[in-house]
Length: 308
Image (cartoon, rainbow, N blue to C red):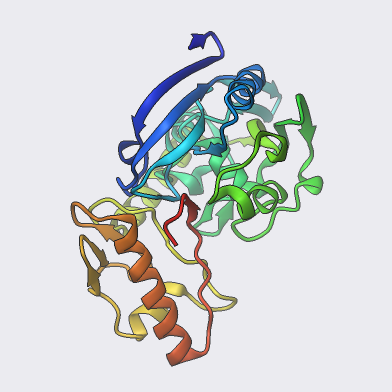
């Protein structure tokens, strides 16, 4: 099934669509380019009485090796529309736009506010959904408006209604509790379609140099291989990576997965890792850190399917 706003594919292997390169087959993948496409995808799921999943860019997901029954929605709108207001600009970016490429394009055009996200994996919609952040910045600092599908309509939210916080938002808090099992169509919460950021004019050469420094810093800290990035949220006034390293867990392996020797908050797929391998390592880290330091590490990664 396909038209301008929606293309549905059957029996799609999900592992290549995730940064961990883990995950079984989706019954259907709905590639969606607008709010109308979201509505059509949900109508398809409702007609066939199927559960719904929201994948995003797959950069912060652990998907079951058993795959996902039902309809997996992927936002594929990569559009970017800029309205210049003298020394500021409001830029509306489609939820499917790659975060890193969008940031680079805007920085090279002389618009400041997102250079901290140079090299950040995933999509713009996913970054808004989870309030992605690093190196002192997060998406909430620049968002002026978020455009979401909700209950059959396109709704425009200002940041104060989205309750952005560390690696979360009101949208994530509403959808996350049922996401791992798949959602009934009637229970699907708001879905990010696009968002508008407010940026300020700056010197393109200065921004380019800033992005180059961020890219070098990211390379120096990021392990080689397939991973989801940071697995755990940082506890208040501490670092999950420091705690995991202090617990002696660098290099801990199970099956095809390993706690990175370079950065302890990364679990790397060495080749052939399963969702169960990652699950086992996550549970072991949580157990050891709790025993050693009395702290409960909370996963940052979103789980889809029965892998826990």
